Image (cartoon, rainbow, N blue to C red):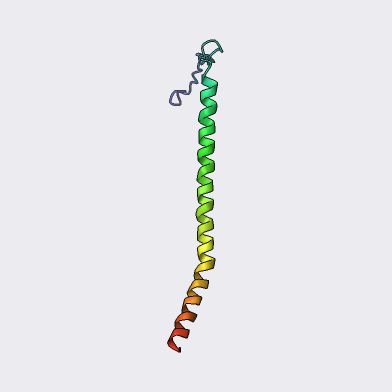
Length: 83
């Protein structure tokens, strides 16, 4: 499109047709490989989420048990001082 001269040029070429591969040119194992790749990444993502959940559980348990153990240690130390 030329804006300086005020003329509009139309595009006469049509885009080439997108050729889809026929089932004969595609190897028989290709769908299995794509399925396996998808399954691998799904399990990889699931494993990552399980690791994150395990780390969160360990952190939660340490946050709950830590102060209890600290308080028990302080009580034990005070009882040792006055023994």
